[in-house]
Image (tube, rainbow, N blue to C red; front, side):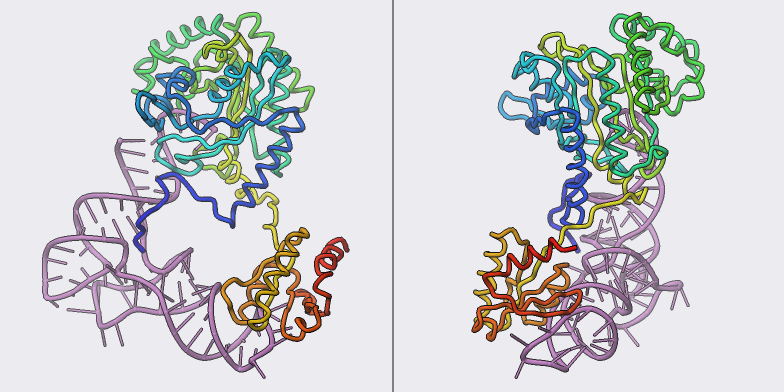
Length: 424
RNA sequence: GGGAUCGUAGCUCAGUCGGUUAGAGCGCCUGACUGUGGCUCAGGAGGUCGUGGGUUCGAGUCCCAUCGGUCCCCCCA
């Protein structure tokens, strides 16, 4: 069939069949964030384009070619291409630093990037995010990583299916020396680097470390450790000690330099062994101690994580993780004959007011068709209303599993169903 | 942005060498049962074969273009 309209490329509808899954992972995420002392923040879906240009970096792929930019008069907006910058903006705008102590904010948000879609990558995707502001101590890094791993465990993803990769990329004080060292290494091996890496050697030399094409070349690249300043070294060592204390397993990944400009010190990602194809990063994050100040706020250490919701769902499916049963209604009201239809509607309304989930036919269908609907609805009970029930003020309650029937006064239906629900 | 691959019913798919009116399973609707679902049986609806053009006596089938889906590179969640 030729469709006149379809969803934009790389953007998906979530249909009633799968939305219970979304609700399930969302509520697990909210539950964990609440347990760890986070409050929810919701920011607009648009921000000034300049916010992302400044924070994510003008030379990043995200800003230079993937942002959805909207213009209205003099204003240039962008659909948010990631979750952190808007939260930082709001943190500054509302002076949240003044509320005292570290601020922990979580969110669930769509984000938009104009890339070609593939498995685990979409033009509109969704992200679970958590950010901590005002905590410079590695305790914050450790707690954040612990929360992330606990979240995945709670979803039934075994630890063996995931790998937490951890690295540090230093700070503005010590990174330049390391960057120079990597650049020198790259220049010494210039001929062996791919075209892409050759060109980024000037602008962003660290990126050659995570180029898949050049892994053979960069295997011998210098590690950052000898270049780290005292603060960065201590931070990273303390963090690793805390992770051991917490029993959070990880692997050191010297190549893990992230694509967004704002990261400092800790960087990490969680990759899945299966289920995600080549886009196997389930989540990514790190510390961004300079970003709040760079965006006009007070100097504020900060860190955060972004978890891909679609990717999480793909992994859950691939691992056959336990998933919630779709919600079922309690009862289906069946009207035999025209006189019963308004009564059926009225009874359904009363049941719903009493907290009973129920449904009924709205098309004037035959009794047989209504019974079919009752069966398909998954309801345990069909409430049958015909002339004799109307005369008696009752409904015939049919248990669709046991096939038993009994008469219940119409005024007692809700109480009866509630009582059944509380039985084993 | 580059590349691979696939588009036939709501869904999953057959469709021979180019040859009559394009099929199956599932799902949906109706009936067998004037007021009773699931199973069974019988019947029915639903397709301009993604779209446009070309070759041919004849195209779902061959060619070209185009639009989508999926996957890969790049990059990232």
